[in-house]
Length: 381
Image (cartoon, rainbow, N blue to C red; front, side, top):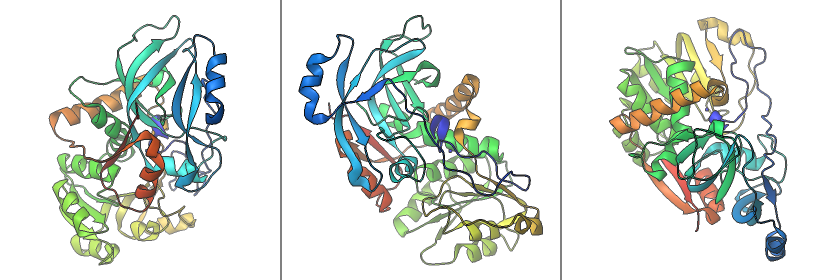
């Protein structure tokens, strides 16, 4: 669950339930953050000479047209000094999430051109005038708005950055911030998982799925997870799945009913969307919660609200930004995530790393389902 808000940027309507205003949410739309100005790579030398002393050139990934991974271009932009309420951060590690793919393809809206990315950890290099509580050298992380983390350096509102404990590695912090807060919101606030609950987690070996499995297990729930192959099944089992279903070999709906003796599950966490939506609903027990927090296979088809009545089901499409909209909520969510990392409840797998300049390759591998766990980009410099 855009960003940093987030999980999913981003901005989808927070709830779709029996009392929801609509069944499908509109595309989220982001406003550009004006502290970063695009400069043509081919004219970088002349641009540098004309920049003021307070500006510098940094490398970023830019999207000028919507499309496949090939539209991710490696360019130079000019970055200025932070203004009131802002900080400048030199990124050390940058998280890759499926929400980045959604914006690149136009599933979610952002004005062109834009720099993608909803999550990063770095070191503060400058602080805006009058800002207290932040200083140069602080290690901070953020997840969500403003979009633009695929950059060597960026300007951020100080209000979205949270301190990173010294015990947590840069790559781990970048990998867990967005996904971890997404998991926290899903498990502790959207539907509060407790001992005795049975939960179904689709894409259980993915970045968010892995954390959901670990955390739900620690909360005392019976965890059922779906994966695509044996290798991912082994990972899901290590992460606390009591029952792992390889959906390419057997029907997950039928298997869930077999596992639960026909009762169904209390909650489904579905990030797949179109291909699994109907089956996910069918897996629910009476008064169960269908939590759709992604659509890697496409937007689910609409259903009549009356379809929920047979078992008095709840349907929700949450957005992390709506659950971390205040500074206190943000710090509480991030703090719980970091505490669970430090205590060992959450084990973060940074299975794939790429240079920032090769973000297109990272996206291609992510969409081809060649990855598991978390993907992190490291600035080339």
